[in-house]
Structures are given as structure tokens and as C-alpha cells.
Length: 282
Image (tube, one colour):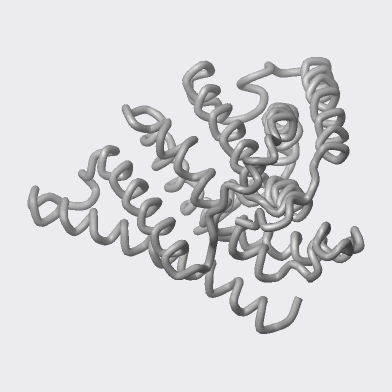
């Protein structure tokens, strides 16, 4: 992991954020010109338009510039068991992640304002038709393509496992995974999501390093975001873990125990089943 590679990874992340900003600017200016109304009156459907434009533009740019690649090689290996355990692991990680997020101190000042504003936008997306597409379908593909298939890929040490019969030492991948997870968390631009995004980034980075493909990460990411979407509608916009499992120590401990009984076996199965597929990097 050289300085040049780190700088390149940061540039990829900056490009991701720049596209997001430009998509938001274009849709916002178009709305204001057509309706002659202030940006504060912009309906949630405009946020969906921003997300769709941003997602399509990001995928197109990263593939066109060959910063990321698309390959069917990994899927030809029929990794159905890995994809299944990725989804199961995602389900098992929800409660522990919410628990960790809940025990952290609340943000204050301008950080709290940013978090509240971002959460309002997410709630707006959750509550309108098309929200599932821009919450659970597009982000897993775009974010895995950028942060695992591009950012992490360029800072992972070589050789990759399975290349020329050589195996990378297990410890050598973790500095790169840690850095890419931190970049991933910061790129969300939402202080409230930082702990959750960072922890998930570690797991997604490990999955990419083990397989050389973003597909398992997309499956995990999709399941995670789908669960968030479903919980929003089933529990009517829960603000904390207690809104889902109730108050008291007993329900919390049971929920954590049940979740860990899902998460730990799923991680074990992934560790046993994930194999690096040569020429599958994407």
C-alpha cells in the first residue's frame, strides 16, 4: 500500500462525491428553473431522480475510465452458497450494529444538524414509490463497485490469493481494508451512519479480498439495505433499537444472542466457502 495508491484511492472517492454533488446540482437547478420555486419545496421524487442520475453516471464513468471492471467470471464459478451466507450474515449483523450505534454518544452542533438533515432525506426516500430502488438496489451496486472494486482494489497488496499459486498473508490485507472502510464511512457524509458503515466496510472488504469479486458484497449490502427499508415500514420509522425490540435488558440480551447465533455461524461458513477466483476481479 504505497502513497501513490492511497492518493489514487482518495481520488476515486472524491470522484464519487463529485458526481453525487453534480447530480444534485443539476436536478435542483432544473427543478428551480421549471417550477420557479425554492429548493426547500423540492419533493422527494426529485431526490429519487438525483439518486438514479448519480448511480447511472457513477457506474458509466468508472467503467468507461477502466477504474473498475465488470466480469462474469466469478458468477461462472456458481458461488450460490457464498451469496446465501452473505445474506444470512447481513441479517445477523443488524442488531449488533444497531446496538453499537446506540451506545455511542450523540453528535452535537453542526454534526447533529448534518445527521438530522440526511436522515430526513432518507425518510423521504423511504416513504415514496421508487424508494426501494434507490435505497436497496442501486446503492449496493454503485458503492461496491467504487469502494471495493476500485478503492480497495487499488490499495490491496499483491499478489492476490490464488494468483500464481501464492497466497497473501492474512494480516497483510487488513491495513488496506481498514483504510477503505474508513473512506467508505466518511463518504456517506452522515455522522449517524459512520460506525455502522465502517463496521460493514470491514466485513465487505474482507469478502472482496477473499473472492476478488464485489458480488458477495453486493448481496450482503442489498440484504442490509432491504432490512432497513422493511423495518422502516413495519416499525413506522424506528429511531433506535428499543423501538424494534422494546425496552429492558432481557429483550436486548435475547436479541443480541439470537443475532450472534446467526452472524457467527454465517461468518464461519463464509470463511470456509469463499475462494479467490482468478481473473474475476471486478
